[in-house]
Image (cartoon, rainbow, N blue to C red; front, top):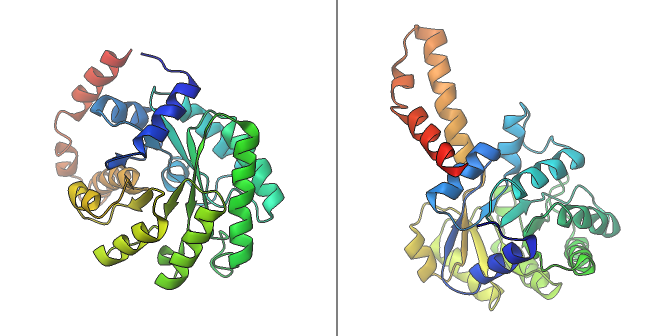
Length: 273
């Protein structure tokens, strides 16, 4: 069944109302359709996976390239798509708003904006600016209408600034600035996850898969679990190991581990057409 963008956006919001769901991250149309066929209820883009598929490092894609990628993924399946929109490709709140509006127009059902500048030497945006950027994203989404869900990310734990008190302060402020969902990637400890859930309440929390089972995360109050670039990394990693083995040893043992994957994929994709 084909749903309209409005219907997919409503469905995406409903997923955040109760329970805990996994939001896997495809990097192209094939991986998106594979995940849909496997039964996932929503998808999210991955900046890393997209960049690797282009032969680049994470963070090296342009705004125009990301917008095209989001539009492609948003129309590739019948599932809601959340956009990994990095730092919205801008520093100033007004420019964040303009770029977020462009992302909304691609047909995504949600998008995330992070407080990392994109430059290791600059680190995170200053607190007041980070909050203003979230508020600008909220205003842009509301101005476009359509119910796109805004996730605000605080990146300290994966950007060399793992300060729990500051992370909580930022997430609470982001919630007040209009974020619908809060996200601090890099949390590993149950007590940290519980603290974020309590600070964000009643708004839902996303976590980057910390190795804990989904039922444990649900018990901790997590609403949404994403895997970032891990699925893309697993796929590229398998290909890398197989190719290295061929080049370095002249053998094909790693390729043999793929088993009947090609046959299974042909069957899956044929059934989807």
